[in-house]
Amino acid sequence: MIVADHTLNRALRHVDNMPAMASRAEQKAAARAQREARQAELSAAQARRVRLIRLGTLVLVAALVIVVIAVAVGGGNGGPKAVGSKTAKAKVAALLHGIPQTASVAGGIQLGNPKAPVTITEYGDLVCPICQEFAVGDEEQIIKNYVRTGKAQIIFRADETASATANNGEFSAGQVAARSAALQKLGWNYIYTWYEEQQSEDTPYVTDAFLQGLAKQIPGLNYGKWHTQLQNPNLAGYVTVDERAMNSLASSLPQGNATPTVIIKGPKGSAPPIQGLAPYSTFQTYIKGVS
Figure 1 (cartoon, rainbow, N blue to C red):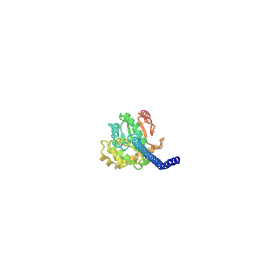
Figure 2 (figure 1 turned 120 degrees about the horizontal axis):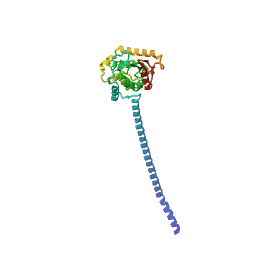
Figure 3 (figure 1 turned 90 degrees about the vertical axis):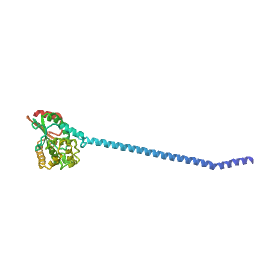
C-alpha cells in the first residue's frame, strides 16, 4: 500500500505540473511570434528604404540626363544656342570686325570690298540647318582667308527652303529684318547672330520677339531705325526678286532649288555651282580657278 500511495502521489504531482509547463510553452511561442513579427516589420521597413533610395537615385540620374540633353541640344546644329550669349556676340564681332559692308541691299546683302576680283553669291535660308553649318564652317574660312584679305566679296541672297517647314509665312519677315540691318552696314552681323542662335527648323520660333532680340544684340545698330525700316516695302520686294532669281536658276542646277547654293564668279568666268555642303578645298579650287 505504501508503494502504491507513492506512485499515485508522483502521478498527481505530474498532473499538477502540466498546466504550468503548457503555459511556459505558450509564452515561448508567443514571444517567438512577436520576434518574428518584429523582424518582418524591420525587414519591410528596410525594403521600403532601399526602394526609396533606388527611386531617388533614378530621379537624380534622370534629372542629370535631362540637363545633359538640354546642354547638347543647346549646342547642337553646329553652333552655340545660348540666346544672347557673350560668347556668340564676341565670335560674330571678331569674325566681321573691320570688313566693309555696303548699305545697298537691292542685289543682296554684301560683305567685303565691292571691287574684289571674285564675287561669291550665296542663296540661303536663315532657318536652314545646312546653311548654318556652311556658315560656321567653310564660309567662316572663306571670310577669313579671302574676304578679309580683299580677294573676294560675298553676297547673301534669299531663297526659301527650310522656312516652309514650321516657319512658313515668316521667311520674308526674317529676310527683311536682315536687310534692314544691312541698311546700317550690319547685315552680316544680323545673319551670323541668327545662325549662332538658330533653332530646329521643325520649331516655329521665328517671331517678332525673336527677330527683335537679334537686332538688340548687334553692337552699333540703331534699333529704332532698324525697326522702322521693317515696314519699308522695298525690302520685301528685294526678297521676292532674290527668290525669282533662284527659281530661274533651279532648273539648271543638279539639286534644283536647294540651300545653300553658292555661285563663284571671277575674271576667268564662273565655277560650277555648289549646292549643300562641300569640302573647303573645293571652294579653294574654284576661287583659284576663276581668279
